[in-house]
Figure 1 (tube, chains in turn purple, yellow):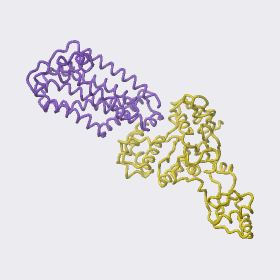
Figure 2 (cartoon, chains in turn red, purple):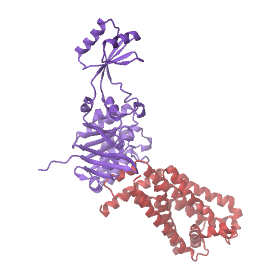
Figure 3 (cartoon, helix red, strand yellow):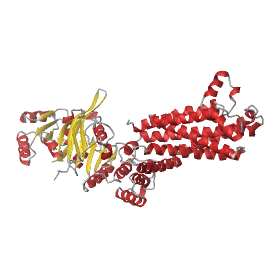
Figure 4 (cartoon, chains in turn orange, purple):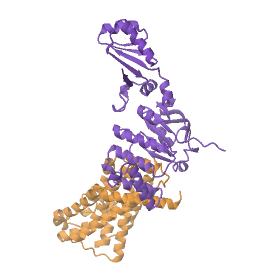
Length: 260
Length: 329
């Protein structure tokens, strides 16, 4: 199978995946509406109280918005992963995967289409949440270089989580199961430095929060966009993302080529 | 000059999952341009045969060739075949037209050709009006038609149809049969699986009866029917005494006391029927109802697969237990 055929087949699959993204009602609800509701909730319900306690930023609601906006970008990536896992599972558990498998096409095209489609769809959702945050008054004071670094990290996180959630979707027995498998990824940000400073947590929770992957990712994003210490977190974040991508990619490859 | 190879040639095909044998040595050969039906009850191994022949599943042993090429060489087989699986493999979120264009794009047909071919296939399969609607809104019959249309985008030489009409209403089933018959006109070979005898009878040049992973019989519909004892006459009576009197006269008859009926073997000729009725008349036995039953594929199937009829899933619309073909007198 020549490379040009693989590229064209993957393009067709990407086109298909993007079309699904627009037409899948779940994409709108969990991928966009949920993060927006969470954003509004944290800013307008908890924001007044939490703003005074957040990491060195006494200043109420608007300071808290600055604090959690980067966290919301990451949370949006996690919710995008839910959609990705479900669309992959739908493909794997309904007849269409066998149709593709019996066709003279590149057999990695379907997975390539899901990865690219999932990344683009999720990044579009992140872009919309960014716009919503700016609409609420989020004013990042990052330099050009910091913006590029922040965007790069968001892309890296998205690639990592997309590969991982594709693996979840490909291994799940049903689309419902795929959705459940991604739930921990959507809850994990709550037990990190995303919404409150980890130093306010009791020791066992704090230790978990400090060493789980979302904390260094959020600290790095926050440091780049609104300032704050980054230190070691930048490369720890990158390692987590690359690790998730590699594990997800390898696992997905196996599931996609295995017949069930 | 080399003789052109059969479309499908299978010998000694075996497959087991753990210690459960699914296929226990299958041999069959399908000439190019013909329709072969693999007939069998649920769980007989039909889908496993299709999966092996379509490169989805490796066999444990034995060989299978499509147009002379070993199915283990998937990259050589896939351009030759097209498959319509048991569960319509249609993309629900795409419209009928988009499904067909996606297939054309995967075969790299070019934009203009893809659009034209999609329109042509929608027309052919009576889906033009639904072409802009999403797959999820299609009825069962429409989905199967779209599925088959997608199968034809590549102009395959061998088409596999795994239970193409399961779950369809009688009208959609007949429409599907028409479509399948049309296909062979173009020299395409069709390998279909079915649990409906009538379907195999209607469509296939040859029928293989598969049961518990073994081909228990193979031949044309007529050849299979010939393997059954011939026709019989069913006589119904209005009273038990009449039945007893008739049974006394006809030693070869099989008695059904509950229904007050007798089943008498016959060669089906009018003359022997007249002789039979005259004998009863002369003895003063009154017959309430006479019907002639010809053996049909149902009888063959049930005899071959040795299962009580109610353990098989068969929609009443296609086959109720040997309703046979009744010719009322």
